[in-house]
Amino acid sequence: MTSSTPAAPPATQQERTKLAKRAAVASLVGTAVEWYDYFIFGTASALVFGRLFFPSDGDPIYGTLASFAVFGVGFFARPLGGIVFGHFGDKFGRKAALVTTLMMMGISTFLIGLLPTTEQIGIAAPILLVLLRLVQGFGVGGEWGGASLVAVEYAPEGKRGAYGSFPQIGNAVGLVFSTSIFALVSTLPDEQLLSWGWRLPFLLSAVLIAVGLFIRFKLTETPTFQAAQEQLEAKAAADAPKEKLPITELFRRFKKPLLLAMGMRFGEAVFGYIILTIGLTFAVGYTDIPRTHVLIASTIAAAIAIYTYFFFGKLSDRIGRRPVFIIGAVVGAVVVFPFFWILSADSIPLMYVAYAVAYAIGVGAVYGVEPSFFSELFGTKVRYTGVSLAAQVPSILIGLWPLLSTALLIATDGDPWPIALITVGSLVIGGVCAFLAPETNRADMTKVGEEDAR
Image 1: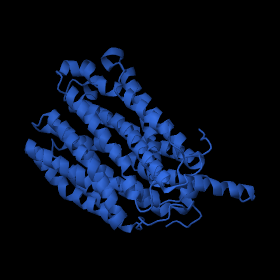
Image 2: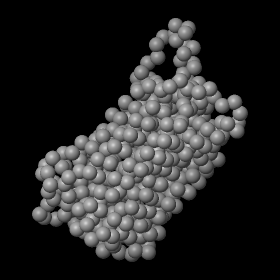
Image 3: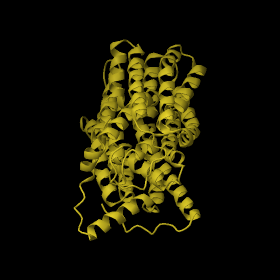
Image 4: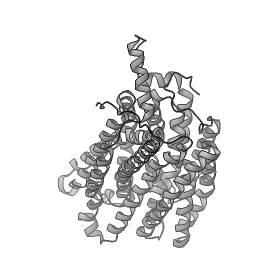
């Protein structure tokens, strides 16, 4: 994986602003494609994969349990993807890594849409599903970190929070597309949904991947990375000591920022999956709310989050990353119990409100500032690796969360309160880590790693 010689930095402020906007859009589109792929797998796990790949003569919830186990498998590949793509992104450039991750995600997702079911080819079907899921996880391990860096490192001074929210907006766009398409196909009769309807969202990803690749191929390397490369070349010419591997330098100088970012990511993701998959599983299995209403509620909440991600990113440029993240963690902890109470009451109108508040405000605040917050915690030479590991190492636990929550629902006969308690505890961890982290919205992003870790 190599990168072409970076272009010279643009000479005028107008040119720099134009490139910054292009980079933000490239981050948004690529991340939208990535998360579209990811969300349709999660939604299919909750709705159809249990019956298609893990058929059970007993309670269908056990098939869903097995599907979420496969969903979790992908998370184990994410840290490895973060290490591999982080290394190449820090050594050779962001662009090549981002193009590769997008291709891995897209090809594996398209192939899932072509998979025969267990009824057709037996045990080979779930085995192939697991393998493709691992490829997805490996790709996503390097995707988010690179997309975040492209947006943040290109951002104008004082606007890193706003520009850094664009990858997160891509997350919401991907969720809108995935849930809206699944909401449409879920209206099909069960026979048609299980025979061909579920395949459509996976096959449609080919169009989105083509758009994402077209935009990303037009990217140039970020000014921050170019500056780092120039300094490294100057050192090499002066016979300076050879640079250490990015991951070695990361663990040597940035252990505390890495751990704090992991804690923040853990709290945000545990809460986020309540909205993305666990709420749907609970509603379908233990309430009378139709699945289509839950999918529409998720779609509307994600559409609102497109605006709130940008709002909270921009707000963090004014008041700081830490207070915005803590606000989101507090809102999340407050709404978790009412969220499940509303679902249990089979109140469809209130369910729409609960989804909107929990996702657009709770998730919106914590998730919206992560790209800028995490990027500013690390030096340029280790930034891709640091951001990727901060996001993906907690994924080993996060990936088991839908499986664990489904098991808890089975063990408690549909009682959601243990899930709510775990979620609140996770948000407390995230909030405390944000409080202990340094405020970074005025950090100097031009430094390349010689500075001491914050």
